[in-house]
Image (cartoon, rainbow, N blue to C red; front, top):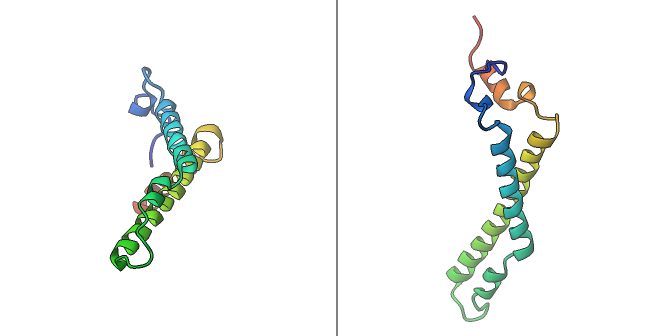
Length: 110
């Protein structure tokens, strides 16, 4: 089990509190999510191959690229939401974390 009361732990450093890197990550994922939201896939639409007389592999690769763009959009949304829950609510505390749960179940107590 992780000792969250240990004052010598590196994430409780006196120079940089452990919360700041999470807040910075939250801001960066939010900005990337905003860029994906407002920029959308304009560049991919410009690169769309012709539907008639074009190669099927080009259309297939273009469709896969466009799908990948939208999957990154969803990943950024989930990352931003998860980090916001970690940073600004008490819904996910270290005591309730999945990591703590996995540590307690992976090493059975004898």
